[in-house]
Length: 181
Image (cartoon, rainbow, N blue to C red; front, side, top):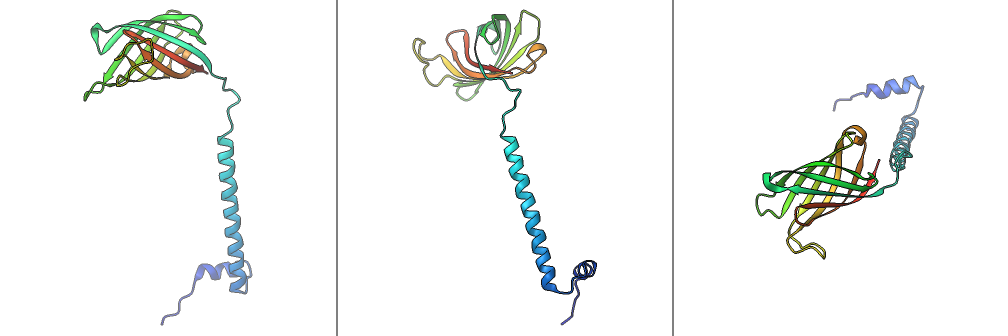
């Protein structure tokens, strides 16, 4: 049987003047415990800091956005919108691109662009819609409902965020929810 030497351990023993393999193992175990403790503390700090809410985040404020669309050029529709609540009495023109589920048409993804008449920018909204269940009264069966979320904006609306629920009675998109900056 061939005898081998472990040069790194010999170098460690000589470097730190360790005469015993037992003392060397004790030092290695202490070193490993120290590294493990440092990793654990780092992870605790990371997750603790990540869960602290931002001081600059404002509380959500209610908003209602209503769009009325002409579906003549479906799936690229145009219309007008009005907004109240957080956005004040904002109004202007709107475009909406509709992507229906090609299999059965009971789901749709819509991208709505609001162009306020104040000229301060645009607001881009992503809508997830479904037509499989009836809407609450007083709307007739077959109308849609869903969720919306602000996914972008320009100018004064570049940092705008918001989301909420959506109903679609007739040629209208009625969005209610919250806005936060």
